[in-house]
Length: 266
Image (spheres, rainbow, N blue to C red):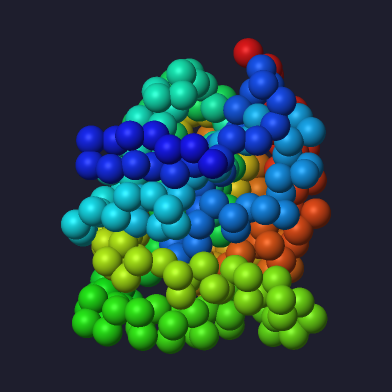
């Protein structure tokens, strides 16, 4: 684990894999932390130096007053890269991490070698979904986070996976209960306000879009929309709910690796 000092506090990160290899950044979903990618690390570090971090408001990173915005969270990524003297990276983000990836592709494409957007959309849900959740979390604090943890199993995993792998599902959903209520609510606002539907054409780096067939949070239709509006984007779909990297496991990892290893190593 490492810490980078931002103007308002510290951003927590972990760097694994061989020095000198191309860098792959992994960006977590709303309500998880950098450990959501644990299943991918053995495969990814065979080819890449993997940089994971806790998004502001999550894990061991800084929690500042909200609301946040995706531009702010994207700026945190750029500050992390600058602090570590990393010029260009492959970037893979899931859900909220995918929104951060879209912002980077639109506004900071020169820092990217390629982009993997998983279980995300150019716009995720309406304010009518987010505002009551924000209000509840800010009002009820840890009790609300525990309730969200229990409800998240059905959103994040298909019933067959949750029943067959209860320990794995619990490990991930426990991350939600441990998330700062203030940080979670502030990030909900960032997701609520993000809308890149009219800007996707500005993404010019090689892009892979991954969807889960059973994802009710960010359905495949939203992933297809991204693929159709980013020139040359590739598309893959797995039998999974919202956290396809966990549910699809090795197949997810291999799909991402096949895409990344096909990119020029410039």
